[in-house]
Amino acid sequence: MAQNHEFELTNTTGRFGGLGNLLQAEFSRWRTWDWYIMAIIWVAIISFSTLGMIASTDTTITDAILILGFMIGMFPVIAVVIIMQDEIVSHRETGTIAWLLSKPVKRSSFILSKLIGNIVGVLISMVVIPGIVVYFEIVVFKGIILSPLHYMLGFTLVAINLVFYLSLTLMLGTVFEQRGGIIAIPLTLCLGYSMLMNLAQIPIHPMSMFFAGGTDESLFGALILGTPLTSVLPIISTTLFIIVFILISLRQFNKEEL
Amino acid sequence: MITITKQIGEKNMNSDVIKTFGLSKNYNGVKALQSLDLRVPKNSIFGFLGPNGAGKTTAMKILLGLIKSSSGTGTIFGKDIATENIDIRARTGYLPQNFDIGSLKHLTAREVLRFAAKFYFKGPEDRIEERIQEMLELVGLEEKADRSIEGFSGGEKQRLGIAQAQINYPDLLILDEPTAALDPIGRRDVLEVMERLRKYTTIFYSTHILDDVQKVSDSVAILNNGKLVAQGPIDELLAGTASIEYIITLKGDSEQAHRELLQKKWVAGIKETVLNGKKKWKVKVTNKEIAERELLRIVHSTPEVIVTSFHTETVELEDVFLKLVED
Image (cartoon, rainbow over all chains, first blue to last red; front, side, top):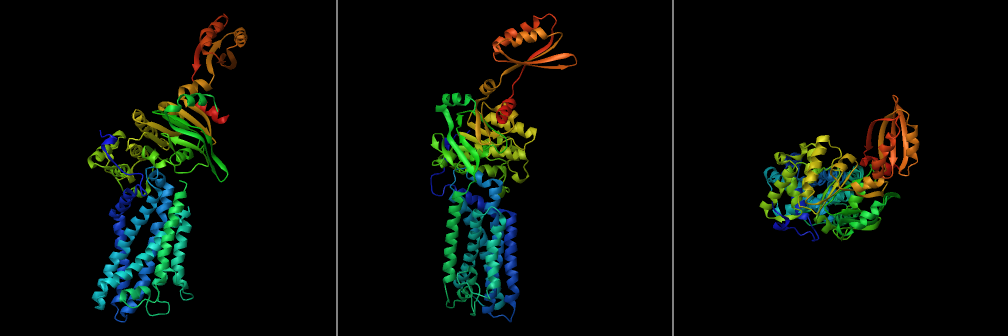
């Protein structure tokens, strides 16, 4: 039988010890039927829900993009929060975290594997594939070929928005032990904005990238259509929030008593 | 704490794998662990006993760096548990209580072991696969190796848990309640696996099933309310904590024999019960050798007495445990 000296040993002293292996495990989830079905459902929801609006002859391309931004900026957030609320809590409850961290694994590696694994999965199933489908819907039904570069830049905002909620929910998982607060805070933040947007504009809120706020075009729409941007503040603030959430997650998880 | 702790601790100081010095843990004012001084000798199967909530899991988690101690220090393989924890974990295998790996339940047993192995080994792949197969055989899961672990029974999960803990041939195996929640067959299987691993590694395991401890362990520590109340080899613990008792069943007038025995210095006491005209004496003695030589001779010296049975009361670990925990 093989003795330990016959193996090539992993480097356990690095800053991100165990990250590669944890990421492989995260990505292995994307090869399961549960995730294929989820991806198909999200592609279907986003594509079909936008199809009627894009196909309608009464809707201009500007209006279509505005409504697309509203839908794609809000609905996938609910799914992201539902997926992420369990990432820390269930692992904590079942003892999986304690087991994983009994291996030569850095705590930061665990948090980063959850972030990267879910960001890749969410972006593929909720941004990239639906984005491609919607692009061809616009080509077919509106007869307009949008600049692929501008279209991609627009969808970058969708990605930033989802990463905001993803990292926020993950951070809350490191702070709270119960699911209630972990779900309630991001959903209130997302749905609450859309309810209150007529009362007050909050320019640093990520959802403000998808609402016109008194103008004809949202930031999302302006990027896709290649028109001048009115403000880049929501992009900067959302990116900064993401960084802060990740840093808090890492700090909080380092202190976690398992 | 009983004196054996100190003697055994000093004797094995240099060959101890785990050493702790005043390890304590408080949760919101509750003392979960109080000044634990533990010594786990190399290549022992060390049972960590205590009732539920005694602080066993807390102590194990501190050793693994999963939680921080409130005070005290400790070493494993001579490395500090607080500052050199990654090095310790690279040489240690751990089975948590009720082994369950929620989000990985779609994996097969072989894939779980491959996942565990990759934390230690980059390659070569064929060697890793060979090690995985060896572990599957060790715990008797080779026939279920390629099935999803979602459908595994509790016993199968525990055996898989031991296999993953042993995947890197660790110098120390820490098993938290490995036989809890298992049926008798599952318990027997897990204990057999532990016996097989005895020659390769030091096993430090917690349990409250005393029968298991007496079957496989050579040393134990008993924890109660966060405090260490005893520690040492089982044989010495049994011999050092319990007085020896002889059970004599007899008929006839035994007054004289009773009086004569109570005058002997080596007799600590006689407890008499009467049932169906027969007397049963529990004779507690302080010197086993004299008692074996003299006890029956004195009883037989009274002609009216007929002895119908005579035997030694066996002291079980359970008796020692209950005595220490209830004191």
